[in-house]
Length: 79
Image 1: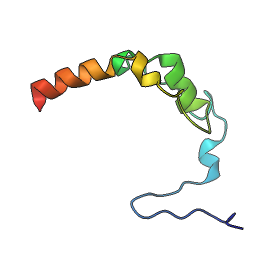
Image 2: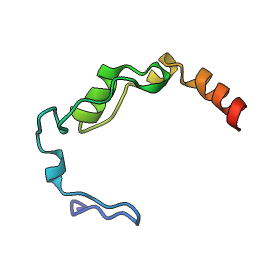
Image 3: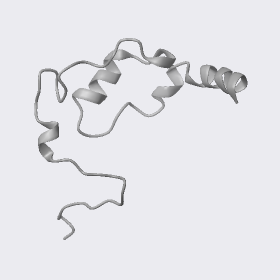
């Protein structure tokens, strides 16, 4: 039925399910850092990283950040 253990090619290493066990702050001991790039919302990032087992941010979320503008400037400056 295909319900066995998932196998992935190296360098991917699958961790034990215990990695996701509840900790002090969701599945981590601490929240995400506060100074995120591109104006990303700390609450959204914290939810994705520490309180989420499936999916991530909503579709198109990146458009609400300054990612495109800042990435373009960085590329023009650094190649």
